[in-house]
Image 1 (cartoon, rainbow, N blue to C red):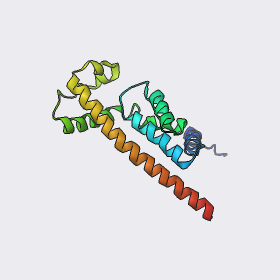
Image 2 (image 1 turned 120 degrees about the vertical axis):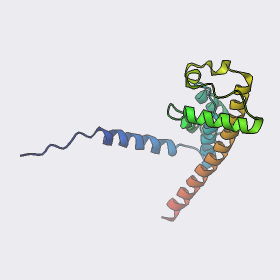
Image 3 (image 1 turned 90 degrees about the horizontal axis):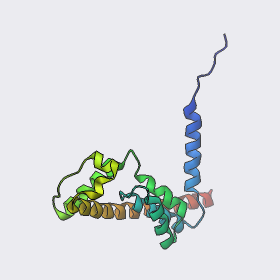
Image 4 (image 1 turned 120 degrees about the horizontal axis):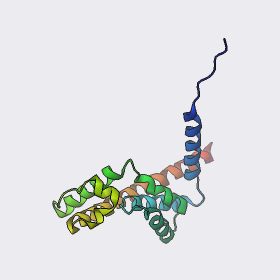
Length: 159
């Protein structure tokens, strides 16, 4: 009796995902341009400006002479799986800096966009926390990516 191999759609999807990630990591530009682009995207991805993060990150990448595609990809740090924990953390950082606020408004207001109609105390804490977390994430992410690119470059030259 002939054995039929099981259908494995995850292998094709996984292969395409690995190809996409490899393509993103090997963008054109100097190591500095690529790291600045990724850092711009990471910074903008920490803000709760749904739908505008990519546009703002590409504009910021233009200002810092970074890679635009990596800037857009860097905003993926915030996605449907990370929205709530990321923005809750950013809010907590803002509360740590400014003192306690009016409290977290809830998931419904985050999803329907009414979060911006919340009290000024909430919005100021969220934006301050997003700025600080974005700066740290951008600096650390850009620096780590630049060092990784440099190490890979040296490894290829030696081998």
